[in-house]
Length: 292
Ligand SMILES: [Zn+2]
Ligand SMILES: [Zn+2]
Image (cartoon, rainbow, N blue to C red):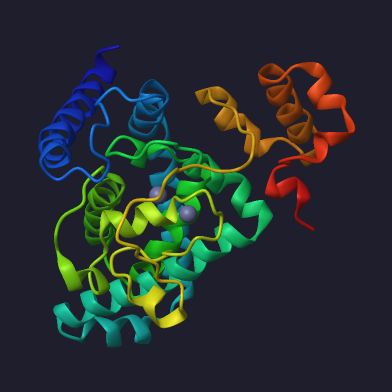
């Protein structure tokens, strides 16, 4: 129990830090005015926050460490030495550009390949966005994203401590772009990512665009940049999806047939039986069920 105390304290401090930084921003520059602090499904997102800090971050770091060790052996020493001989600022620029390129395409795949979408839709099932909703993510989805983002840094031979720095920075950045904030940064939105861009990524449309991370340049280059002058009407997904922490953790792991039955069960819980079994059931079937 005593062993757990430092971890619990760290979680408490992180929570307090995020509240202190993002709550005033959300009050002064709200993207959706009038959204309360305790909006619907706040507790569910809190479970994801606690799960991420107390359970999954250790697993993700361990996998990343294993991955890094494997890569370390497979990259020729001469290549690493050549990279290391460049000025440090150039190495940082290379890492940021390469990882933005990789995460852009990796993220686009998460929306286009059903197997990856299975895990990624946990994140997109959030119907309200704020600093806390940023933490709604399946651990396997986190491993995929964090692995991909850090692949260039590992290949270029950056020490794990520097990689941990990138992870921390990107973590705060992820919280920022999900926060209920709209800062008046004008044309800089084309260069630096902004919450409104990521908010459009969370539109109900599964392929709404804005897949990039730190800078939206990749979206501009590959034609997926979207930035209307207002917030999307609704966030979330069209598909039926569990609303509990356990349900969201387990659902992506179920074989498709079982998951399908699970979704029908959710539908039954919401609608009278006759609407489900009548021929008109063909109405809003989830895109996942109706897509080829
Ligand atoms: Zn996404
Ligand atoms: Zn997001």
